[in-house]
Each structure stands twice: as structure tokens, then as C-alpha cells.
Length: 63
Image (cartoon, rainbow, N blue to C red; front, side, top):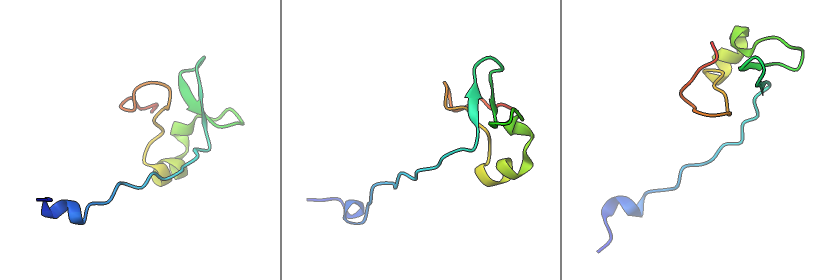
């Protein structure tokens, strides 16, 4: 017998998101190509929710 919920379950969609910043290992912060800190850009924070680094744990924030 197949559980009822599995009739309607769908795999989560993986969204492709490209962040406008990159991790700088020297500063240990996310920075824009022009050198500004990503954590200081409020528009980016509003849009993406945070500036978490992809280098290491997703629970550590740069701000």
C-alpha cells in the first residue's frame, strides 16, 4: 500500500541563483567585484536575505 501523501509529493525545485558577490578568503567576507562589502549593500540583503558564504558552513553570516 502506498501512503496517501506520496501520491502528491513532489521533489523540491532547485533554483539557480547567482550571487553578485564572491568570497574573498583574505578578508573572509563576501565582496563585490569593485571591492565593496556585500554585507553593506542593503538592496542585496533585501533581495537575497543574507550574504552567507558558500565557502564553508551556511550558518555563518558575513555581517
